[in-house]
Length: 311
Length: 257
Ligand SMILES: Nc1ncnc2c1ncn2[C@@H]1O[C@H](COP(=O)(O)OP(=O)(O)O)[C@@H](O)[C@H]1O
Ligand SMILES: [Mg+2]
Image (cartoon, rainbow over all chains, first blue to last red; front, side, top):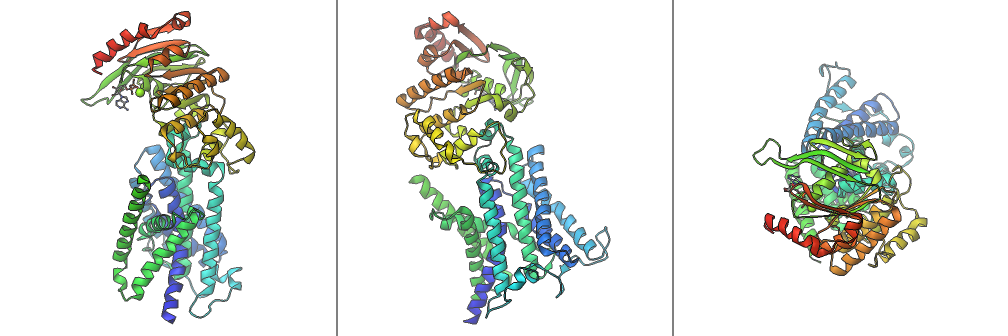
C-alpha cells in the first residue's frame, strides 16, 4: 500500500513539474504550430542558471525568474532564426539546442569554479543540504515537509507554481497581444492584414514557451537536487506527449480550459510511466515506454480529429 | 491614387519553368474608383493584387500610393490602408478563434496590441449590428469558432472584418466565387454598400460578368498579364454583358477553358 502512495507521490510531483514544460509546448506546438526542439537546451539552461544562482545564495524565486528570462532569450533566438533568416522550425530548434549545449556546459563549469574553457571543474551543479532552493525558502518552508508517504511540501509548491504559470498564460491569451498570438498560429496573412507583423508575434510566443521550459528546468533541478548536463534529454517527448494526451483525452470537456487539460495530460503521462515502473519494468526501458505512450497518444488524437471532421 | 509603373514580375526565376507574367505593366487607378477586373484564369489578376498588397515582391517597377512609393514596404505595413477579402474564404479570418474574437482583433486594427483585455463587452452590440447586415444569422453565433462556419458565412465575416477599420483601399478577389447564388447576391450588395460608405478605392476581381457590368465605375479585362479592355465613366455605365462577352470568350478560348 505504501508503495502505491509513493508511486502516486512521484507521478504527481513529476506531472506538476513537467506541466510547466507542457504549457510551453502548448504555446509553441498547439497555438503556433511550431515544432520547437530548442526546448532540450532551454530546460537545461533553466536548470543550470537556477542552480548556480541558488548555490550562490540568491533568493530562489528570483532565480526562477532569471531562468525564465534566459529561457525566453533563447526562445527569441529560435524565433529570430526562423523569422529573419527563414530557417525551418525543426532546424532552428536543432541549431539553438546545439549551441546551448556549449553555453550550459561552460556556465556550469564556470559556476563550479572552473575556467571559461569549460575545464577545471564538474559540469554538474549539486545542491548542498543548506542551499536555499524554492522548497527551503519562504513561503514553501511553512508547509510541513512530509505527511506519510507524501512529500507534501514539494507537491504543494509545485502545484502552486504550475497554477501560477497556468493563470498567467490564461490571462495573457485573453489580452490583445495573446489573441494576436493565437491568430498568428492559424493564419499569418490575416495578422498581416491587421497591420501587425506576424513574425514579431511568433517570436513573442517562442520566447514565452521557452521561458516556461526553463522554469520547468528550475523545478526539475530543485526536485533532483542537482542540474546535470543530461537533464534536457527526452524533454521534447515529455512535453509534446503531455500536450497531446491532455488535449485529446480531455478535449471533450468544454468547461476545462486547454491549459488545464495540458496540466492534467502531463500528470496522466507521468502516471503511466510511474505505473510501468511500479509494475516492475526496469528503468532502462523508460524511454521505450515514453516513446510507445507518445505513439499511442498521437494515434489517439488523430482518430479523434478524424471523428470530429466526419461529424 | 494607385499607380503600377512599369511592373515586371517573373516566377520561378532561374529554373526551366521561368515565366514572365508582367512585362512592363502599367495601371493607374484614381481615388474613389470602383474597378471591376475580369479575365481568364492565369491572366494575373490575383498576382496584381498580391503585388499591390505586398504579398509578393516585384522584380522591377514601382507601386505608388497617393504619390508615395510603397514598392519596398512590407505587407503588414501597407495593410494599414488596405482591407482585403481573399479568394479563399479561409484566409480572411482565424479559424480557431470565435467570431467575437476575430472581430475584436479587427476592431483594434491600427492600434497597438498590448497586454490589455482583448474583448470589450460594450462593443458587442456594434459587432452584432454589423453581422445583422449580412443576413446570415451570424449575429447570434458570436461564440462559435470561425472554422465551423460555411464558406459563405466566413466570406461574409471576412468582408465585415476587412471594413471594420478606416481603409483607403478595398481589395476583393473573387470573393463571391465560393458562395451559392443567394449569398453571393447579398455579399455583392454589402460590398457595394461598404465601398460607398467608406468612399474607398475598390478593386474587385470577379468571374461573374453580370457583377462586373452592374457594379463599379470602371471595368478592366486582363489577359496574359496585360490589360486588353478598359472602360470607365459613361462608357462603363453603358456597357452591357454582351459587349464584353465576345471578348471574354475570345481570351478564355485561347486559354482552353
Ligand atoms: N507563387 C507563384 N509561383 C509560380 N507561379 C505563379 C505564382 N503565382 C502565380 N503564378 C503564375 O502566374 C500566373 C497568374 O496567376 P494568377 O495571378 O493567380 O491568375 P488569376 O488570378 O488571374 O487567375 C499563373 O499562370 C500562375 O501560374
Ligand atoms: Mg485568382
